[in-house]
Length: 336
Image 1 (tube, rainbow, N blue to C red):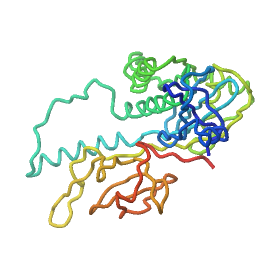
Image 2 (cartoon, one colour):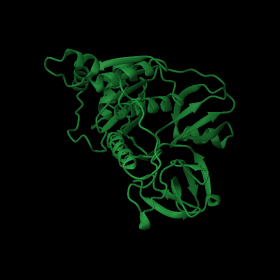
Image 3 (cartoon, one colour):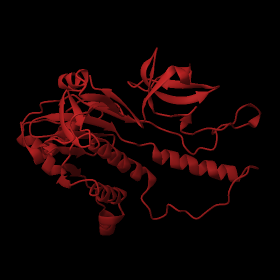
């Protein structure tokens, strides 16, 4: 359960979050409406168009496997999120390449080879990872009155005697510069070096876990909390260590068909993002399985998956038995 609930005014302005108890009081008295945004519960005030806000900072701790996000003001820590990075794009691009080569060697319709339009651009695997950070930042910006984003400025591993690679041609350096340019369009950005983050953490007496893949506050969110603290200040100890665990969903968009043929050498179609009119990944409510998300489709039925572990719960669900809640491209669960 969320400890703090975002508040949006009747005019669409983001106000200071409130407690879950106060949010339920506003709803029961008819002063607010209950809303959800990709798994986060927030309220929309009916009788208030403006309100007073305080500075709120978002700390962002990038990582190779998991990343930390913290929304914090001087008084409270409103949200901690640990996000799984996207690491499958490089493998998918390589598989697509070999499938195109194989199709051209078979007697199957195919387009002629084209100029490599990705040459000289940001590599798809790097772009997907930085795009996820940008999507999370925009997601939080829709619900919280954020004044600044504090990002840990990670550095690429240098190569001896290759100054140009270290400054310009490293995919990591190019990716983060693209990310910073996009972030500056949506809000103020402040950068901190890794050693500065460590110094802040040590001065506060906080420790970082060596288990980088654990679902613990001290794995990544402790650094994102320190980054937000460096801008807004406040208590020297985290007052809220509960986290949202965010896992991006993997969609198969442009695959022509199954990689391996079925009986008779037939390769049936594969991929797509719609299941009988419902966008895959959307949150729905089913009378038996509760809140789940939409998966694939087969024989006029859809499959539904658990928000906790992504496991498929059923694959013979009728669309008319489901209530649409919201679109989503990731699944969310609360940390234990």
